[in-house]
Image (cartoon, rainbow, N blue to C red):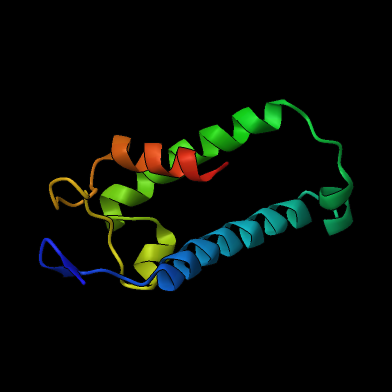
Length: 108
C-alpha cells in the first residue's frame, strides 16, 4: 500500500526496527554498567524507583530530539532504511520536538 507516494513498511518490519533500537540501547546501558563495575544481575535485581520513570521519559525525549532530525525516524528506522512521515500531510518527521514526543510515548 502506498501513502503519499511511499510504500508502507509492514508492521513486522517496523516492530523489528523498534526492537533493534531497544536492543542497541540495552547493550549500551550494559556497557555503562560494566564500566561502572556493576553486573547484569545488579541491573535485573535492583529495586524499582519512581524516579526511573522520569529518567526514562527524559532519555526518550533526548534520543528522539537527536535522531529524528538526523534520520527522519529513530535509530532502528535508520538501520532498516525506514522513515517516519505524517499520516495527515505526508511530511517527514524531521523536527526535534516531533521525534522527542514520539520517543517519549514509546518509552511506556
